[in-house]
Image 1 (tube, rainbow, N blue to C red):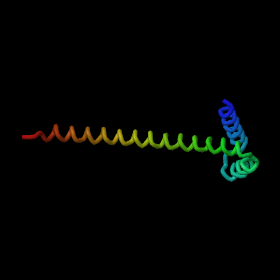
Image 2: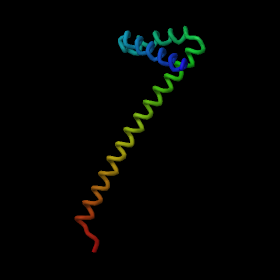
Image 3: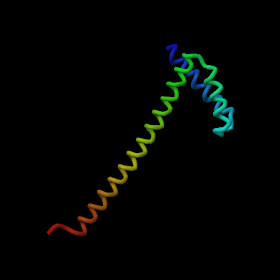
Image 4: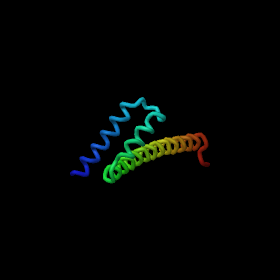
Length: 91
């Protein structure tokens, strides 16, 4: 439970700091680097897990998007094949 609380706290700090900054990478990097430099080993471990979770979520979203595109392509090819077969029946 304590690990979850620490992770939640790290997530809230991360969100709060990014909402305070303008969102420009050149302004966010020094803020994040400064916070990372001040973290103890436990805080670094939590931040690492938070970043891994963000990466996993991005990867999952990309995979879902790719699968959706692939499904659309497969459906379009199947439809084109069916239309071709209707207009060119086997004899």
